[in-house]
View (cartoon, rainbow, N blue to C red):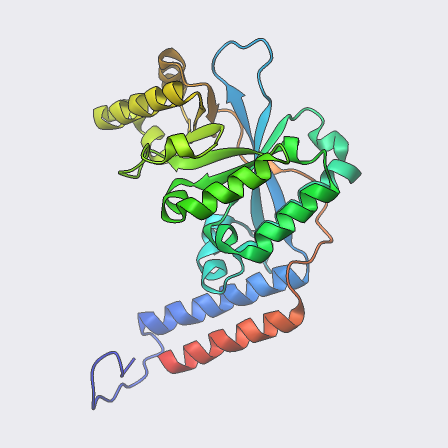
Length: 301
């Protein structure tokens, strides 16, 4: 920290310094993440996605999410622990773990998913760029030929735009395994429709930030209508995230949005009562990650 203040500076360590506090809090959370990896305390949760329009045979959708059971029994969403997972390049490991678990479910606990046509799951930007992850998915689907038609990979719109060619290749390759795709958090980028015709995706998920307070924002209402128009012209089904009120549901239904997801219908809940026996990374890698973080902390203070 003295280095950050400029040359020839002396920094007296104050244990109450906010930067020190944050670093130590990060170290504690990293330890919790590594413990969760070693002790198989990552969990699969799901949230239902419901049809808003009358359909003869609507696709039954759920979104599968990852949670972490901490040392003290608290359940954290991925958003809460993802910054450190991202910093230490563990995202593709979690994505692989999630796919292994879903595959196991289809074989060992098929009744848990028998009423579901399509499981939607988020694939991180790191995984998209990771050749080993792409090979892993291809091999997994080759070994399990019936799995692909039950999966829908959600790709963040900004990630798709920043790695367009790679994303397009990934999509086209997995389409051979009958995997579906969705662009997640759609509508917040200035180039939302720029590459859309070139990406063979099936769903557009409207960013929940546009939906949560939709009826109080004429600007958000106009954006949602614009996204719906794009979806209709490109023949992609629209899913609205973070629907929390009946009034919002009624509005989305009236303008023609196909599906909705949010606490109005179901809160995210455990997909299985029991915990997984799968491992994500080995303890040797854990020790290396922890050592790297401790070195960063020592340098900071």
